[in-house]
Image (cartoon, rainbow, N blue to C red):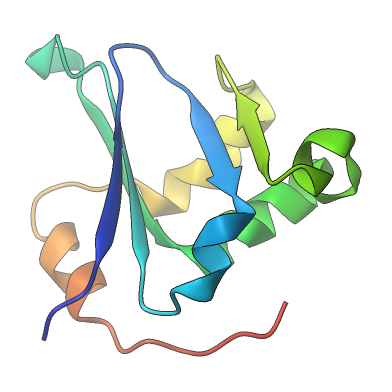
Length: 107
């Protein structure tokens, strides 16, 4: 099974969601933080639908930034970090997430 992955690799923590990715139902969004410090690396992986759900919960989807197609938070707030925690990747989690069947979601 092949799935496209959009990687966001940064030296500092930041989370963003762009509406343009909604068009690719099987797309996974990977967020890698602290890539210049391997011991501090943080990795999160989610579908666009999961990222959109976080954006909705944070109230971003009603903002002018979202209407323009993108919302970004840097650094992530404690609330956002809590919402991202279920998507944190570690040993064995990458493969399971990539191989998980794709569900369609209408936004």
